[in-house]
Length: 204
Image (cartoon, rainbow, N blue to C red; front, top):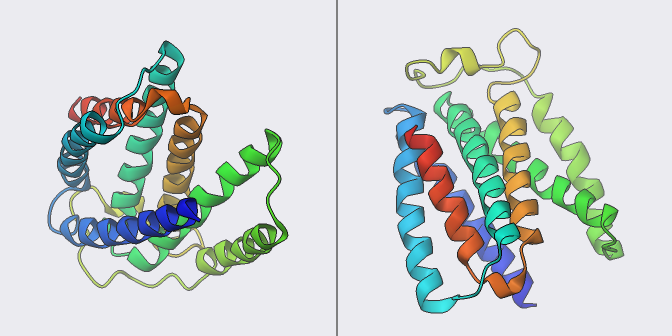
């Protein structure tokens, strides 16, 4: 039950951050928005780890954090690019569904056995991806920022932000899988590694 509550809170906060970040990315370049939000996240994650989740990470745990940081950067940049193009209703849901589906498949391949209700949810998510990605390709209702026009799905038969949403979901899935493979004894340090790896990559 605790895992379900935490997952629900995670989904809620992700949705709020997507909305706020998407609005800001319409007036500032999405890379700067991503860097600012990630820097705040890094500081908060470090403080949370020291106060509540100190642990003893091993080298593999730190390496998984680095891999997760790469996925986090890629996913966030693609999501912000899609949101900056005015495709919040497409990029956001697509990234969420893809990011949830891939870790489930990886878990099953690794021996996890989801319940029947979980499989029903997975089965319902697949047509949801198709319905979102095959919707009409309307023009965004706001002007895209510099460099955003090239990210659109115009001419591809997919709606604005569909490609970026899928790519963002893949990046977030890499983050989820990497963090999930870290040992519980590592505490919050793999997440700290994720956050600071992301800050360094974005700054570069």
